[in-house]
Length: 128
Image (cartoon, rainbow, N blue to C red; front, side, top):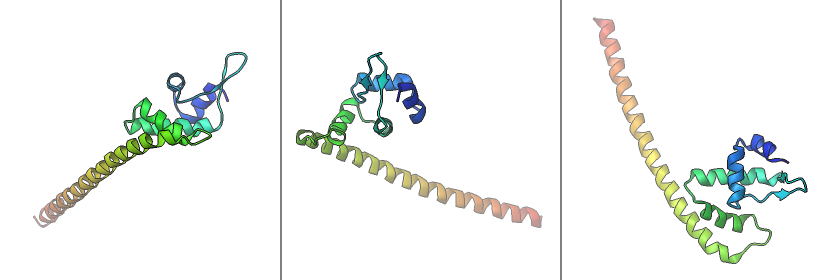
């Protein structure tokens, strides 16, 4: 598929796709006419790139994951770095989840208290 189709299927801009190629996160085949030819598997790869960027990984960190995840033969030498980066990110995600759970509980408690106040106010207003 051409770059425009990959962009359409993933919702990622042409500029971003070219950037991913420049950073060797994507490696499309070049046709004789110079067009890029992407594989169906590149759709998932682009989605993973987007997810990893949204988690705050750098290009180099993503590349280390991809060397382990997408290469035809697993490269043992890439595993220690991939494990280290993965564990660090997992710790960060778990901390974010914990903070979100605390925020959720806090909001639930406040909303319940505020609704109780409003409910009392409505009853007092009806009696008055």
